[in-house]
Image 1 (cartoon, rainbow, N blue to C red):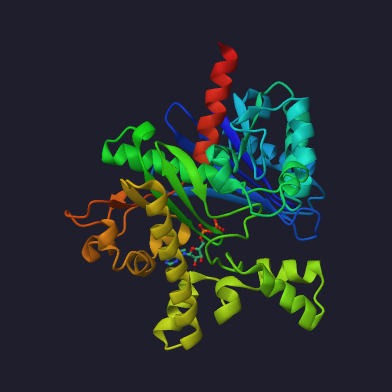
Image 2 (spheres, helix red, strand yellow; image 1 turned 30 degrees about the horizontal axis):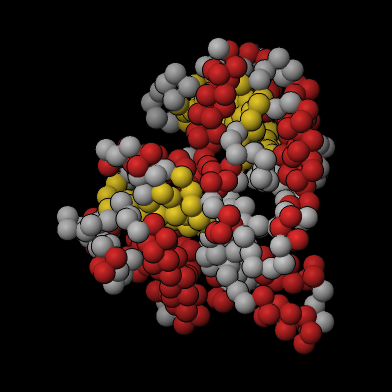
Length: 403
Ligand code: ADP
């Protein structure tokens, strides 16, 4: 079964083509700067000897339809497929699925209307996703299309945990609640972690920490999300590259009154100018590590703040779960930064969490354990693969359809 995974952004489309029989990537790539003059399209195809065949095209790509047409041409030219219509399915990443989508869904008119209706909750993402879905249906009308939502995995969070303590009508009328994001990643690494430890996912309790440019923590009980750090939007929770995470909302009121910032300016401040970047001027953890090494005090402060917030979430989710089988680190920082892992888990022996510094300093591309033999809670590093999870869920729905 061949499944194409598409992640359409406002000016880009990322894609991966999977062969699900061997669970391997046949090709992947990106179309970037759609709508601009310096647009480009790339394809990367793994070869038998472990190397990659790559090809790049630079030409104006006016819209998503043109972008998808180029992806189709690149796939055909490279001999991976003859036609997009020969695909068994296309899986689309959609950030916001609201309260109605508790699982992935086959695309029909209702699904498209719902994604459109949810635009007000995800104004930067859902319009581009919808555009991607529409052009994909036009170009491959005979291929089943599936949407996989970042929010679905968190639909099991109980009401007392997903509510904000503001007047109830804002929940009932405006649907303001914690939706959570990164769900595909949290679910994927939890499944992988359970498999690695020989546990059944249905009875597996874990705290998953997805630490990339965006970062979120999730409390997983019996394989289901019971709380997560991101909220109505991805702004809440952990300190991120450019987002402040948890903050007293009155800080923003105060800045508005003092400096005359309007809502749009505050939005930019909290989402794009804060977090690690706001404290030390850089949002790339590799650079921050170098700055710390060269004695930069602000970089050290930013890192301490990042780790401290992370530790608070590990502690609070330990309380939420009661029994924790496992803490899982993933994402660019979680998978690669041994110092973040060691410092955020430091002095947590009372919670049964004990890192083996030697194991923690190793690097693997598959799941590995970094806790000591005595650690009651296993601590794992699990590489995430959201695209593969989208492909798996797409395959599952298509197989159901065939029955
Ligand atoms: P995104 O959220 O955009 O998918 P990633 O999951 O790729 O992002 O994570 C990006 C972050 O991971 C950046 O802060 C980057 O510096 C960090 N990162 C990547 N590799 C390393 C590394 N070897 N050591 C420390 N941080 C790393």
